[in-house]
Amino acid sequence: MKGLELSEKYYLVHGKKMLEEKFPEVAKRAAIGLVGQGSECLGFDDEISMDHDYGPSFCIWLTKEDYEEYGGKVAREYERLPADFGGVQGRIVSAHGKGRVGVHSIPDFYYGLIGCEDTPESNMEWLRIPESGLCSAVNGKVFMDPLGEFSRIRNELLAFYPEDVRLKKIAARAAVMAQAGQYNYARAMKRGEHVAAQLSLDEFTKSTISMVYLLNKKYTPFYKWMHRGMKELPILSEIGDILNLLVMTEEQAEAWGNTRAQDYLYALNTKDQRIIIVEAICNLVLQELISQGLTVGEDNFLENHTMYIMEKIKDPHIRALQIMEG
Image (cartoon, rainbow, N blue to C red; front, side):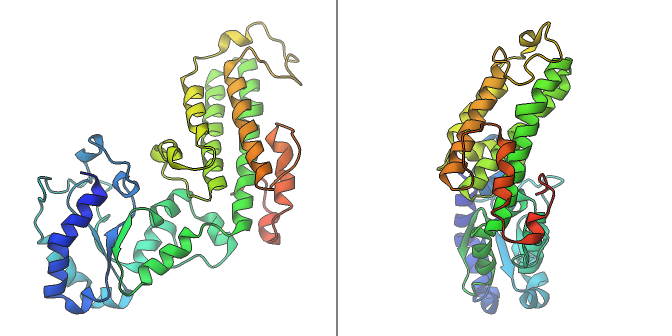
């Protein structure tokens, strides 16, 4: 059983009764659900995931005032709920999984994920929050929220970045894709620096995945689930398969045998299959940037589009940042 389904059933059978009978005043105000860190909150959990931080559990989110008055009492009753449920053994908590479920104050819960107790107040605050933190704050499912305070913040975050912030991040991703994948990979291969070449492809891959999420107006998950989540995106999900091909392509040292420093200075080494794949990915991204009205022209070198994107940013403080910041 998927973790989200297990969580909701467990709450309806045990948690709901506990709150309504022992804390009726809290039951009228508490938000209930499963949101935050962990594969089950993304719906990506499987048999492998069940060895840690999986099991019957849910979150109870209280306002700051309710948490101060009732938090400890509700937490003690939560701990008394049956550990096993529906044929599933009690939750096995890992060293880093403590505190993911149970009773939370709403401001503390959001602060722990995004560093803000409420919706960010400025573009710069939005820019500083890790994408994976925002993803964790809006994933999962809210089973009920009679007061609406938890969902108010959640829905404001779900509306995605302010457009100036999204544009800044897109420009930064385009710059890294160009620098790492279209430029530094080839330079590293010319020098025989194969570790540096692999690191360049790693940076290219991470920035490409983030770029695809930004173009979909979705937050990028924690690195372990970045690629998996691409399958469900409506725009450029095919890049996920192409990245898999890039990773699986064998090392290309032979394509660079006997090359001189000036070789391929202004042209691609098409003997290197990885370069062909990188350029194909960049072209797909470029076409989507054009489709969204974010750039013009057919120059496949993404760095040459970054300033055009930056010029669309209205906030002078965001527009003045270094191109790769964000």
